[in-house]
Structure formats: C-alpha cells, structure tokens
Length: 449
Image (cartoon, rainbow, N blue to C red; front, side, top):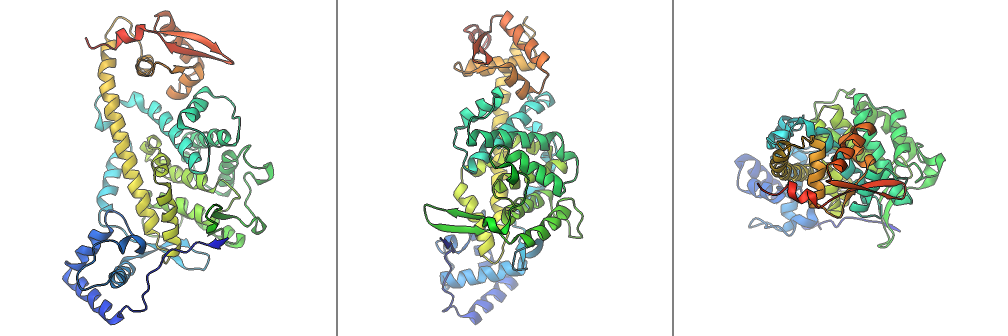
C-alpha cells in the first residue's frame, strides 16, 4: 500500500515578491486582508484543500492567498515540546477566540456546571459521572471498530455481564479503564508503569497476553491504514525514538519540564495527539490517547469533564478526526489543526451537556411533586420511576442501580424493594439477573396535578 499524501497547491507560479509585499502590507495595516484571512480560518483552522474553495480576496489567486496564510501562520506559531521522528518540533497557534473559550472552561469545568440548572444539584454528581464514563467508553471503543449499538453496549455495562466477543470486551475494558482513572489514577502522577497498566486494562482479552501492557517492536510494522482504499495514513515511528519520547511525554504530563505555561485543555489535547503519533502499542493506541486526555484534566481538577463523553462527539465526525491527524503531520507539523478540531468538539460536548441538564431540570419539576407526596421516595427512586415512565420497554437490575447511582448493593436492593412494595415496579428473573420493570401505576405519579 502507498502512503496517503494530502493534496498540495502548485506554488511554482506564485510570485514570491508579490506575496511578501502583500504580507508586509497586511501586517502593517492590521485589517483588510488580515481580516479576510481570519474570517477564512474561523471557526475552523483549514488546510489548502478547504481554503481554495473559500472566497479569495480580489487580485489574488488561491495559491497566492494560501502562501500569505502560511507565512502569517509561521510568524505566529510557537514550538511545542513534541518532536517528530525527523527531529523537527510540532508547532501551534493560539486561535483568536481560544482565550475566551479557555476562560469559560476555567469558570465552569472545575465543578460549576450545575449553575446551568437550579433543579440539578450536587447529589446528581455521581449519576452524571456514571453516565459520562459509560458514554465515553462506548464511543471511544466504537471509534476503534467495536461493532455494537450504543443501546446494546449500555445494557452490557449496566448488567455487568461478561463480554461475549471482541467488541464487547473493548467496551467493558474501556469502561473499567475510565473508572480506574476516575477513582485512582487521577490522584497521582503518570509514569511508564501506569501507562502500561492502563494499556493492559484496555486490551484484556482483546490481545494475546504477551502484547497486553507491552510496547510493540519494529518487527510489528504497525501502521494506520485503510485496506479498502489501499492507503497508509500513518507509520509508527521506530521504537528507539518511541522509548526516548515516552520519557519526555511522562515529564510533560507531570508538569516537570521548563516549558512555558500551557493551558490544561491544550496540554491534554497535546498528550492525546502525542500518544497517537508515537503509536507505541500494537493496538489500543487511540483509546489510550483519549484516556490520557481525561486523566490529565481530572488530575488538574477539571472534574466536570467526567460528565462529557468527548468521543461521542468525535464519533459523529470521525473522518474529520482522522484528517486532523493528517493535516498536522503533513502540513509542516502544525498541531493547530488537531488542537482546533478537539476544542470545537469540547464546545459541542459542553453544549450537549447543558441541553441534557435543561431536560433533567424539567423532569425534576415533576419529580419534586412526587417527593412531596406520601411515598417519601429518595432521589434515586424518583429518577428511576421517571426513566421507566418514559421508556416502558426498559427495565433495571440491582447491578445497574449500583452502577448508575454508585451505592452499595444493600442500598440498591432496599431502593428497589420499596418500589416493588409500593406497586410501581415488578421483578422478573431473566437468566442470571432479576429485572425490575415499571407498572401502569407509574403513569399516575407523573400526571400534571
């Protein structure tokens, strides 16, 4: 298979003196063409294959416009701590709107997401974390080829049964790794051993034991390719370079370098890219890269990211995700493409979560009526009844109740028994599990009074 190459403009006919004059005039005037350039690359940081179809300023060819853009980008770019195999550093540019976005993240993602809804309180925290971790585990696995529906995958995790095939094992492993980060790894520095441990968790029963938690070798010849199209998108660097860079990555992740301050969102995204670029394992590199993104943000106390399944958003634009890697690697190691793509997805994930909170707030207004009734059910019981009233075909189990609300088995059993006694749910054994389904009595509870 051939290495895939991005389309490049033919710059042989570009008048370099004309481009340089335009560049100097643009920088001096700080308007006109510079505004055109900013409008062209905002909100997305675009490559030549997209920019050539954008409105081009009068008097310029598409190739001349691209040449000016590239010169301005080079003037604004900063070196990162990440190096390519050829020894050159990756660079990046702080986009104009990034400062405001990062400021809003600092205000809200350290735990104030509940400000968006007065009816959703701190008691809901663990339910939201469980939901976020579950959704992330499913989507991250699906990005790497897990062949199962979201509904089936969610049922698998809630029931806590053993995986039956490769795809289910990916999802269960990813969920376990996400929980490990949330419960343990976020509280300590990362090191080579913990990277290998997390990889072993991610690939349990998916790789031969000798390849779990072990770096690949040069003989493995690992590539990212598309066998249908017959092209290779990325070739894993030589392992001597990988071993050298992993040590640098660990220092970078633990904030033990002399680099200037980099905002945690940007730094987490850089770690995401770095692992994927090095591709140190025979499999599981993408899942590990996204896992380290979460680890770094949770370690830096951006714990609200536990609610945000970024991979669920990425999965909706998986082609663009792959292109962000390609643009970065093939357009002069410009990491801005990858950073900008991920920032846009974080924005969408936050907006999706705010919408979800708003919906929960409306549901809670009905729940509050129930809490004032003679039943005196707790929040967990009320939320379960609300769920079963909307999805009559669904059911729950003791295991699912424990997983969603992070309570003990004894508490889960007590919750469910009280609802059975009140006549709102009925138990039914299905194989190894007892499922609790809603009765028609639930409808009466949630009627508007």
